[in-house]
Length: 392
Image (cartoon, rainbow, N blue to C red; front, side):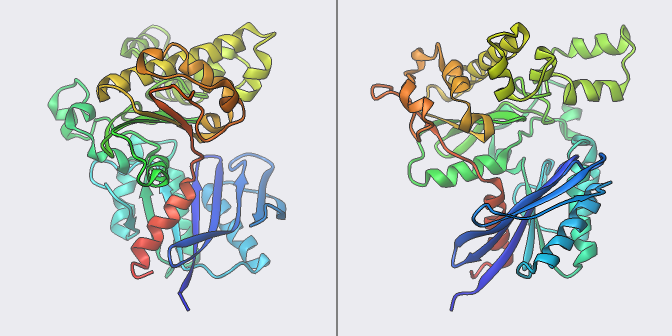
């Protein structure tokens, strides 16, 4: 009888802790339960858990003052529901820095090193590290695995990783790291043997980025030193003229905290629209709200520019993949982002696109355009199983 392993995958952010619980046997994974603890740090925290069929099996209101409290509250629910005993916990960690280039089993030395990287992603790293520490406090002997969102990109050539800054800053770790790497890994596995020579993957969600992949290896990506870089996102501006930051510091009296709120929480779709960071809300409103319409127009325009830039780096384009919440569900964004890309041999079939088919390009399109749902938690589960149970 093949061994069965129960793997919990958690993704702890600043205001939520999402999880998936998997049963893994002989390389086959099945979902046991999934859910989230939401509104961490706010009044009215909630916990929701669904079973393998999507049926709600737990809904409760809890005081979730910190991410660690949220993780502990989830474990309370797991015990109350008598869910299977855990064999390993896998974590999505946003930043691995220059040295953590593959998933690792958590050790005290790794935790200490990750704490030194908090300054690289101050909004994301404390929650991820707090999740690891919360699990260790509750179950000190339970193996844990850290999977880094930056690891996928570490195979990029140095010309893509470097910023045009003095070399001592490169030595200090200031470079293009890229993010959403766990999502990109999942998409590459989903392609199996269907990996084209020149590929762009567009992960479009509240945070959004793209990766150029040449012959199966990362070539370039849009995000940079932090997840605030690249093209316009839900609440982040993407790349800014550095002079804007200097102007706000010197002439408008901004301090570091105000700049952080500006570039992480108040810009992007929300900043331009003045209405929402949610694409569906803006698409519904754009017929009567000029600011919402402009936000969507800018978002699609910047996606189109990023596709063009990465296609230039690749020397052409054989396949474009949309993934992430927006990429998988917002047909209007996909259509508008691809307008004007005929020079890349790209043509969208409106019927296929509107029905969210796997392939949404027209029959005569030289570049194949696909929609592939991502599953970062499943990718984390696979890494955890491989590292902790290498024999299966």
